[in-house]
Image (cartoon, rainbow, N blue to C red):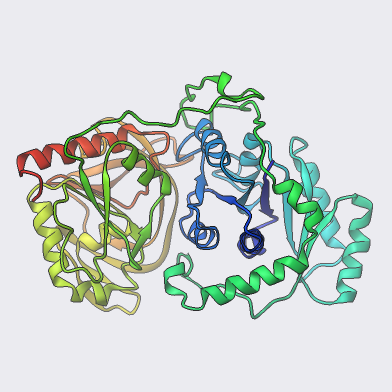
Length: 484
């Protein structure tokens, strides 16, 4: 069945509770697959750290409603337990008009019961009104129960239980205020796992907390996976074209959906350098899967510490992350910068998104106002600001790139606190927000064989994107032998 962990709003403790549940299951040596609603990168890092399995993002805007179902089905076939961590409040999604891409939307698509987390730190009887309102707001949802978080005292708990008793909604967990169990955060969310040296201790404490704070006799049956699957409620989301879907794949007795992209069967295999370290860690596991399924060999390297690109690569993938936090170290590794610059100037197909784009600029100006020299392939400076650029983006490609042909449409997500001092003379995209009637913003850079943008892409339901990228990489390899 699996379970959706939802909050009545952001900041109620969904991630802490999710990690506590995952840590208990892992401690009991039970196989568990986790999922995260929405486009977030950092929460899935914590999931993976605990379970040892890549957490999968469920986002019907970046992919499709059909892909969400297929992804969930595929990755729950080999585990005994599964859970889905929600995003923001239960009904908060891409728009205020409906709940598209919300936790509620995903729970309906996957036929999952909801475990509602309530922050009780400033509540007593009002907690019942919140629980009742959430349970009745959408009658299509099934509620497994509630978790009372940040309970202050025994007396506080008595008041909460008395208020909630008439609702006949099981209290599955009670967590007291644990001010000393916190995960540090900064300007884009939680601090990533690679930067937390005491994370093992924290996870152990969360596991111990989880063992005593939850009713596991109720929880385990709810988290248990099974092969039943709902019929897709809708294949269309606002502002998107209908999704072509074979509904026979979603009847109660399911064959395994075919998620495999076309196999290129290249000889030799294209080797793709993936920047992966503390500065660059924002990647969707599905994107890596697609590259490998198409025949690519992924070679991970560090712009922070490695002196050059790996030998024999024909393509470069620079994901997002926190280059502004590690700007001094990136600037000091001039050999790596030169290697990247020479490769791009030679025509190596390169995909850079958000933090990767910033690394390719002439400079990064950090929050302290200090400038740091970067690769310099893009004639602009990335400056950190207090302004958050956040939201789904519809984008039309204005010209051919290694990922997209001119005129093609895609959906992505933007999430950063930096701005560029100059725009490209030949912008990559024409973009607009999720609810925008027209696309008026010009964004991104296209030079040499470089596709650079602030917009993050999930390729799950668009295997033609990595297919095109690898074809460009193979062509580059043929022109230059097997390597640059």
